[in-house]
Image 1: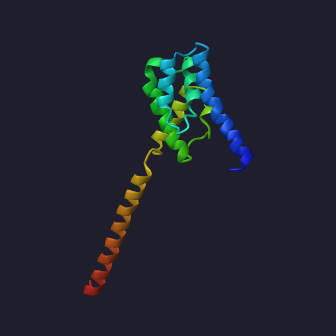
Image 2: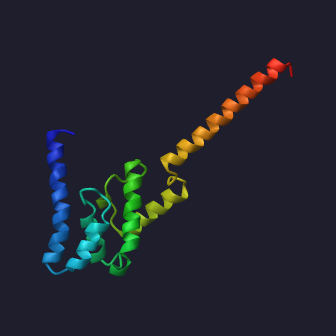
Image 3: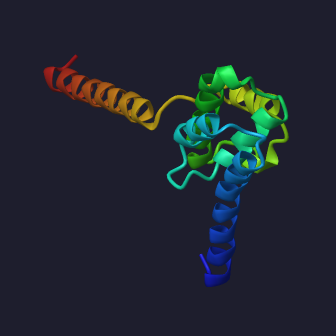
Amino acid sequence: MTHDSYLIFEAYLNETRKETKQYVASGKLDPETAQKIIEADPHPKKTYSGWMARQIMQGNVDVNNLDDLRNTVEEFHTFLQRRLTSKSNLAEYQTFQELQDEINTLNSTGSNISNKQDQSDFKLLLIQMIYMWWYHIVMQLQGN
């Protein structure tokens, strides 16, 4: 990352955190809900909290249903890290429903299989191949 792009990224991080705080300062969002949003943000630097707060402010998410918001954003974060999402930034999703649709699509296509599961399946396949190879050699040595 170049120095200029790092500065732009840092400015973006500060802006998203500020956004949530501004909603509280303006009275549009109560401090308790804002705190819950920040705690629910799965990003280490809490960069999703602004988007999450905006979804509540726009009425796209019920304040009483923060678990659904948190779970969906956590799944997005996981898929984003694996480079499976169609958009590279949460802010590109205009509504919570749009994000949910993307996550549902990814889940239905099997994209939610973990890397550990992939590795486990590969190891099992490798063991089966080795077994078959040894079996073939033993049978040849026995003359069958």
